[in-house]
Image 1 (cartoon, rainbow, N blue to C red):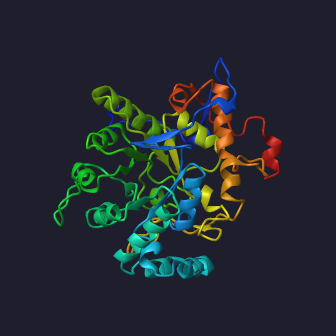
Image 2: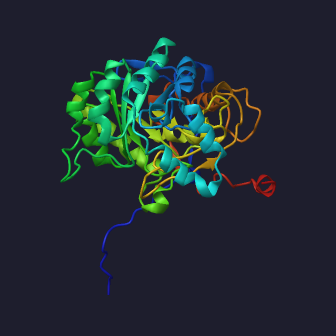
Image 3: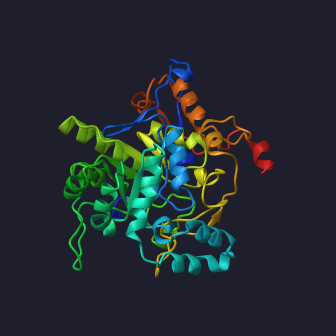
Length: 379
């Protein structure tokens, strides 16, 4: 007798289980175009520093912009809760592991000071840098006008999972089409992992979508809630939504794969899977310029009742410029990310990221271990 199926279960693959197939034609890496466009803004590299307190502060935002990328300042973090965020960051870095969650909950329970929002944005703008800021959906309508008035360039709305159809008896849901009109600047929304959710978000008029639930090194959402989809199928589904929306409207809305990156190879795989750019957290938290002092923690870590993050020790591996552009002093792919991307595109014969989307991919569970017994033995 055939057993009835309660629900379908599909196989999903992470970065370590897939590989990119080289193309039949190769090109010089220095001839590749890796621009990322969000609305009317163009960035020379498709890399965004995450809106996390251990990754982005005012100085990091300025530095990242000058190097061709983008860094997102979190408007609900220590930069807007503390007059002197350096003291709070030092306290977090020095806290014993057994006490750090309670400390984070205490620091993040301080109220957001609206005057600090304008001050931080203005410092970034005065340096000639592009300024991107991030909030959670619950605070978007309150903080968006303040950010827009301070002349922020891009407004991110981020939570663990964001949809257009949120049901609540306690407050009126956030309507993204109204938010886009309110701020008058590009609005980027995340996070999602499915075709349908991504397509519905795009239809609200937003400028880009963030893809990924729970893959970050400092995130424990997958352990606490059991929710998430590996980044390769999540990226491919959202890329399919982007293509559907483009065919419907002629408007191209980029998708940005957010989280789960450790090395350049994973960045290359994300773009081959359909991403237009990536958002990095722990990788850039290792930069000398990062405010986390060698530590990294998830922004859901300070939740007052259900923390979904942990502080991790990432160390300091080099300057931001070295991590992005080299020269690499290590062989594990954690430095010169841009060089890795250009080389992979050259091997695939892709002149730009749209052409990289066409690169063939294969399921390859042994891709990181095949023939590597000596390397594994030295770990």
